[in-house]
Image (tube, rainbow, N blue to C red; front, side, top):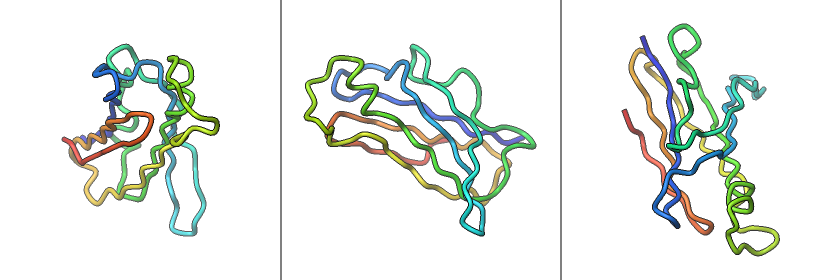
Amino acid sequence: MGRLTTHVLDTSTGLPAANLSLALWALDPDGARRLLVETRTNADGRVDRPLLEDATFVPGVYELIFRVGAYFWTNGANLPDPAFLDEIPLRFGVADASGHLHVPLLVSPYGYATYRGS
């Protein structure tokens, strides 16, 4: 049974990004977007349960939107207005939904990186 998970690390502090808001969208072939999940990270920078699992995790195109601007403002980062990074959209495809797909985000106020985890 497959599942989709994520976590966020704040590379400016070297700590998990706790209480960061994120949303998962499905992108349909006709271009429509469907909101699947809205949640926040826990104290470890992870969500408390998989974003999708079992029958809800199917092949397709998804987009995770991480609301990093609000996270950095709330945590007292010295940011310009507007912030360089506000929302980070990560669009990815899932060809095989039978395994564990992990999509981590490493973020600072001025840059980010991601990769396909497992």
